[in-house]
Image (cartoon, rainbow, N blue to C red):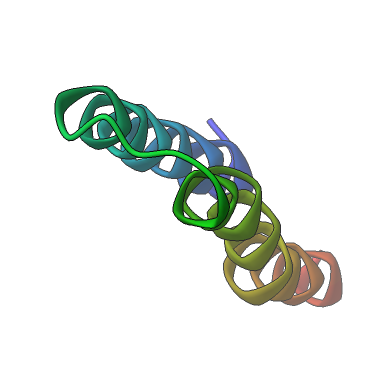
Length: 59
């Protein structure tokens, strides 16, 4: 399995935990937006994309 796929699976698990937190504490509004889309976008651009660029250079 590629490194980026593993990172995306880890990000998905963290996102599921965030969704559980949203349901448990009945959050609404901006915190929900930050815990879902903010996390997903930030994780993709700050963690996954640099890792994929590193693997492209080594191939």
